[in-house]
Amino acid sequence: MIFSIHIPKTAGTSFRNALKDLYGDRLALFYGANDPATHPLLRVPRAELASRLPALADAGVEVLHGHYHLSLVESAIVDPRRQLWTWLRDPVERVISHYSFIKERPTKWAFDKEIKAGTLPLTGFARKNRIRNIHSTFLGGVELKDFAFVGITERFELGLALLFGADAPQLNRRYNAINERVDVTPREIAKLHALNRADINLYAEGLRLMIDRVAAAQAVETPERPKAAGTGIVRRLIRKAS
Image (cartoon, rainbow, N blue to C red; front, side, top):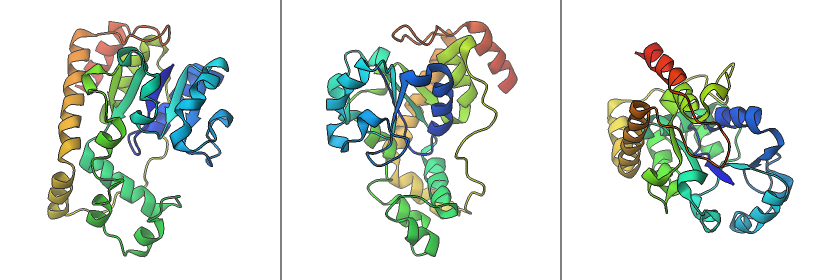
């Protein structure tokens, strides 16, 4: 089984739609026991997620995508170079986008009301343990170089091409995007940098890994699907972006 870890505000919802196009019923989602999008077999406390994976495999599921920490499924990972996928985003921009997202629409986060009322500023939000260095928290346990695929949100289409090759879905839009980014001062940006040093280092490593993969037009090794990415589509996207 492939484990696709959706870190909040890293284009994970757009990737979820791409996965749905390619895998259909062989895709299972996990966003918590009470979320309507969560697969029926996974409506359990997060700590019990690993215990439900055999039943999920028996049901024909090939990919598990959602908000879950790698540590929750690590016992089921035999070969991370074939089983682990994720996307990274500039950590400062990710925090700003996350804060802006909560501010403009209803969410289930405990500090939703504080943000909407203006009593929890951006830097206060960024200091929360659930937010600070969130990439590192979700992915702790396996080195990034050992992942089968690490996408960069800012190069989403290129990442899809690297992963799926000619089968890469063409999405009509980006999903769950914010309508308006909150204004941020240089001083606040500096604080966000200081609060997310581990994630900034991780993001730099993810960028290097993607550059290396593009340079080699290297196919992602996976269990049967998706098909190996061809060099042609990658080169066309590189020319388009340059």
